Length: 184
Image (cartoon, rainbow, N blue to C red; front, side):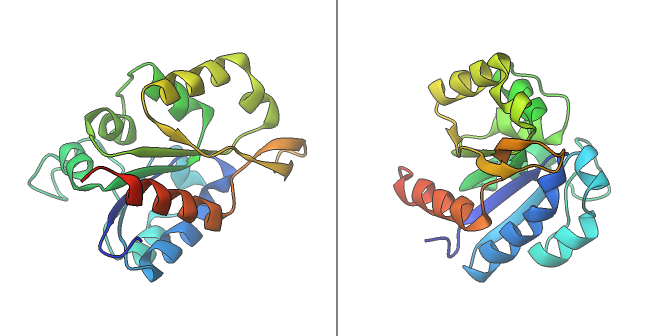
């Protein structure tokens, strides 16, 4: 299902960012062309070099980076995607997207794309259950954005509850389902 598909993966600043390496590796094994975007905070958890090595492409992190390409980066990424996946999706990226805030590369790409978008949230259980976060999720779903529910279990912060990044296999299943149902 993912062979010859272009996946743009947005990695945001949560402890689950390290799991993005497994998502990338699995997508590449299935024949996908995967391009990675990272927030500054994501770089605190995993290095761009790791994700570049696994994806085979430079990692994008700056909204304006004239040294990487001659085209407008956020438009190029938005246009080339068969799907955009945000994993992990923090409460911050969900809120910014829900309110149309475009102050970094990922939020700008999300605003510019016509491709389906899948959010895979990962955060503290109380952040996930916060009524504002839930309103933001519902708002985005109303506008056609896709969400995977966070998994339940032990969280890095020491809490137990809903907030874990779903297993990479579940994320790949959701990507395949969305891409295969996408209108041609």
